[in-house]
Each structure stands twice: as C-alpha cells, then as structure tokens.
Amino acid sequence: MSRSIFDGAFWLYSAVVVLAPLPLGSTGPVVLAIATLVLGLAVPGLLLTNLRRGQIGLLAVLVGLALITFGVLGEQLSWVQWPWAASDPLWQEAARLLGGSVPPAGAVARAQPFYAMGLGAAGFLALSGGILIGGDPQLARRVLRLVAVAGLVYALAAVASFAIDPSRVLLIYAKQAHQTSLTSPFLNRNTAGIYYGCCALIWQMLVCEVLDRHLPDGRFSVASLRQRLNNRARRRLVVLLACWLVMLSAMFLTGSRGAVLLSLVAAVAAAVLFFHRRLPRYYGAAIAAAGGLAIAAALLSLLGGGVSSRFSAQGLSDEGRLSTYRATWKMVLDHPWLGSGFGTFEWLYPAYRSDDISLMGTWNRAHNSWLELAADGGMLMAAAIIIGLIGGGVVLAHGVLHRRRDVIFPVVGLCTLMAAVLHSTIDFSLQIPGFTIVVAAVIGVSLAQSFRSGRASVPSRDRAGTTERRV
Image (cartoon, rainbow, N blue to C red; front, side, top):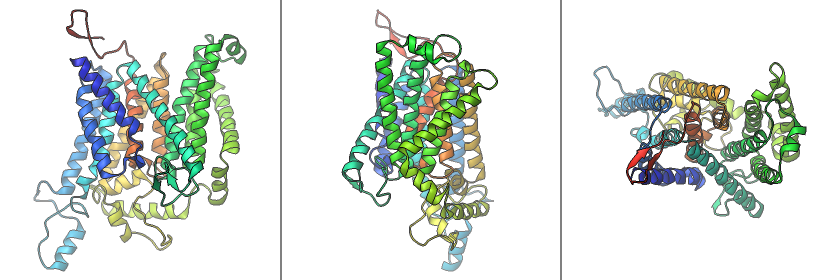
C-alpha cells in the first residue's frame, strides 16, 4: 500500500514538473492554483520513504524559511493587532484624507500579499518534493530525464511554431511583444532562454557521463576515448549531442542576452566541474575553462546571430533597468523591515518611477527578483532567502567535490542554481511559476544526492506481501 501511494505521488509530482511550462509558464491564477494543489497532494505521499539525515536537515531549513515567510505575511496582513504595530503610511494618509478610520494594514495593497503566495507555495512544494524523491538515485535520475525530455519536446514544438507563425506562442496565443524572438512556451523570451539553457545543461551532462564511462582511469585522453567507444556508445552519444544542439538552437532563437550568456558560462563550469578529477591539479581547470569559453564563443558566433546583434546594439544592459533598480532601492529604504507587501510592486512603483524612463510600457516587475523581494518582503526576508540559497550552493559544491558516483546531480544542481539566481538579478525568470517549479525540482533532487547515499529507500514489498523499506 505504501509503495502504491508513493508511486502515485511520484507521478503526480512528475506531471506537474513536466507540464509546468504550459500554458504560458503557469502564470494564470487558475493554472497556478491547480499546480499548487496537485503538488500539495503529491508531497505528503512522497513522505512515505526513509529519510536520511541530510534530507531531514534540508527539509528543516525549508520549514524555517516557510515560518519566516508566514511571520512576515501575518504582519503585512495585520492578522494580529499588536499595540506597537502601525499601518503603512499610505493607509494613514488615506484615513486623514477621508476623515475617518481605516482598518490597519501592513501592505500598500490590502490582501494582495495573500494572493501573491501562490508562487512561493508552488516553489516550496516543488523543492520539498525534489528533496524527498532525491533520496533514491534512480528516481532522482528519472526526474532529470523527464525535465530534459520535456524541454526537448517544448523546444521542437517552439521552433516549429516559430517557423510557421512567429507572432504566436505555440500557434495559439498571440504575442504582445518579442515578435521576432522565440518565446514558446512562455510569453517572455528571457524566461524561455534560461529554461532552454538549463535543459541543455542536463543533456550536456548526460553526454559527459557517456564520455566519462568510457574513459580509462586517470586523466582525459581523446585517443583512449576513441578506442573505448563501441558502436552502441557512439550511437547514444550522437543522439544525446543532437538533443543538446536542439536545446541550444532554441535558446539562441530567443535572442535573450542574459540567458544565453549565463547558460553558456554555466555549461562551461559544469563540464569543468564534472571532469575536475581528470584534469591536471594546478592548471588543468584553467585550461579547460579557457577551451570551454572558446567553444561557447564559437557557438555564439555560429548560432547566436540575433543575440550578437543585440549585444552590439544595446550592450549588456539598458537604462530602463538601471533606473528601475534605483527606484526599487528607494522603495526598499522606505519599507526596510517588512516591505510594502508581497506582490505589491506594480501598485507602488509608479510613485517612485523617474522621468528618465520611456513612458511606453508598464513596469510590473523590477527585473531583479532579489531587489523586488527586498522591496515587497523587507530586507530581513530577502536576507533569509539569500542565505538559504548560499547554503544550498555550499551543499551542492560539497557534493561536487566529495561524491565519486552520480556526480551529475550536484553538478547539474549547482550550475542550474547559479544560472537561475544570476539571471534573476537582471530579469524575473524565477517569478514565473512554470520555470520556478522546474528549477526547484532539479535543485531538490540534486541537493538530496549531494550526500553519500546507499541504495533506494522507497517502500517495497517482500514475497509474503508485507511492507518493508529498502535502505
């Protein structure tokens, strides 16, 4: 019975991870609510497994972050009327102008923080589920493969749709912007670019695994590799390389400067980290990184014509973003501890918007998720999340350096975390549920596999039919 429940929970969880990019990155409230509900049903079933100390520690940290979030949320919604608590100055000004009393509220938009919790809940459940599944290396590998295959299917569909009608997302939804860039299955080309870059990273690591499996012990040698690769391995290598190139092509077609640049850097870092034990001790990593960057530059030149032209025309950034960053920082200084309220950026930003930004368009995001988090949730909330991310990076780095088998997990997790976090300093990819759920699942299984693990720990049945557990 336990095994059946666990299997059902695993496939429910996997279905959400695979389908999260549809439709339009699960940005609609109904779609996000359904995804969160299904994840909420799946995670309790995934608890039917033997948890190791590393998994328990990771889950404890997540619970701690959730409690901090609920504390901030409660203050923003004024669940408890503390004697020393005061409403946001905007509400005090409204009460003065209306000549009456206004119910206290810690957020500039009443109740909005509650409705903005969908993204956080989905990310929390996806990361928790990944950690629970990651205790079994076979299931963890299955999650990575599902993410990679789903990304490949989306890439093929997106390229075909873009070739037929560039003005629509998957031939269905009309684009409001980015008419000359591939964005499917998302609306924004930057989110699509970093999504395809992260999926390409998994395909690349599968290629590296095949190469590593057929290399003799010791340092890397092209000659020894050619001798040891049999026909079956060569066919598998060709298929994996083809899938990787499809993902790269889709990524380049998005025309996203930040996504392409960070994805290529993450790809080079992943290759160096994966083969670091085979490289010469003192200078091998530097030489490998230089060679990888040269290959990345060649790929950018051959496949990324649109990206290169944007670099030439606009450079690495634009004045609109920089001006928005300055305005958002002023919002942080005016609401330093509890923020203006989760999800209230688009309500408050017009009061801080400067006149050096074009009047065209609406800025409903800060294009820096961490700065926006500090503005919405306060500096303490942002600091807690950033410390948690740094801690996760340390755990993954520990796995890269100390694991002998299945090093693909910490390498993929660390480089995905690096790419997603850094990209969110120049855009809002982690504020798109369809991308956040996928990244959280990949990082979750990678975190769980960053510790030494034995055999699978999912419930099983013995011959007599009684339920036992494998350790």
